[in-house]
Length: 335
Ligand SMILES: NC(=O)c1ccc[n+]([C@@H]2O[C@H](COP(=O)([O-])OP(=O)(O)OC[C@H]3O[C@@H](n4cnc5c(N)ncnc54)[C@H](O)[C@@H]3O)[C@@H](O)[C@H]2O)c1
Ligand SMILES: CC(C)(O)[C@@H](O)C(=O)O
Ligand SMILES: [Mg+2]
Ligand SMILES: [Mg+2]
Image 1 (cartoon, rainbow, N blue to C red):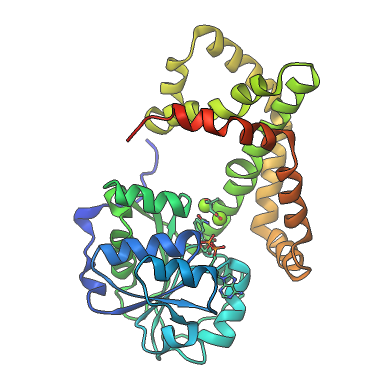
Image 2: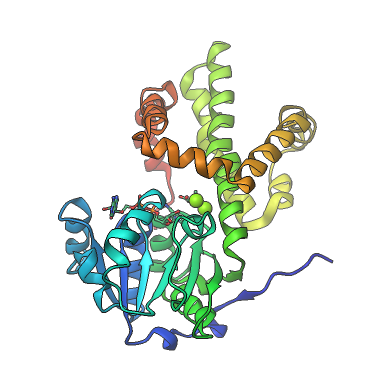
């Protein structure tokens, strides 16, 4: 038997712990927009706090919010949610939140980076908890609007009131997550697994695997469009089946030829060496080495990130994606 994690769903969660409280959502980007809209639609009292007038300010206003400056949003907030980039949270905390927040207000995170790596040291009289969506912000909004929810990890770091988990579950319910499930974790577990996941599979692994297969086929003289359909576009369809039926469901949905080729060749391509490097990546996350390197990169103005984005924008894969976009969109199921 596997060890079953504690999972809360809608029937175990109530909005009551946060009803009528003022909830400041800092940031209106990927997660900020989704959380603010979902929680507002769920009947919670939301104020959007932003640094300055700009794109996010306009977006929030268009969506029906009246954004205010960060320092004004946190002044009388009972709950302060950090939905700004991980690398800016420390500065915003030191300069805008800590000097202006109400004593004892809750501090809430969607990822444990700043708390786990001690970049933010919270006051001892605040509840500090986390609701970490296991999916992108746009999906958090899309699923909620369609009546569903993206699962989350919930965790408490400081529980002064004795109600931190209850409040985390209220937020999870507010964003629609408990329609699916809220799994109890810790700041350490969420932070480390999230970083390992995005580096080795979700962002880094899948991208490099797709690029390796695509570029190999093109180098061998196959048409880029054919290579794109095969190595990038169809991934969604295969992953959709894994998503609903697991790996076994996927194996049963493909031909016996694909089963045999996949079972034998997959292990040769993604071999023991790859596992070793995944382990190395995970150890670098766990030791804090990755976090230190990322802070240094951010402080230099993110040259590696900027260059990586530029490289991808100019890649053949992206050119084919742009060329085929209309065709691919045309073929998608209509709602
Ligand atoms: N992106 C995701 O889907 C996702 C998924 C799970 C958890 N998270 C976590 O959620 C948090 C927010 O990530 P995100 O991707 O939604 O952020 P984001 O990059 O989309 O944040 C953009 C928002 O932050 C504001 N912002 C940018 N720089 C700022 C600064 N210097 N000072 C103040 N505000 C600034 C912008 O105005 C904008 O409103 C992070 O902790 C992240 O790890 C993100
Ligand atoms: C969406 C992801 C990759 O799961 C999230 O962890 C992030 O950092 O954006
Ligand atoms: Mg992440
Ligand atoms: Mg993640």
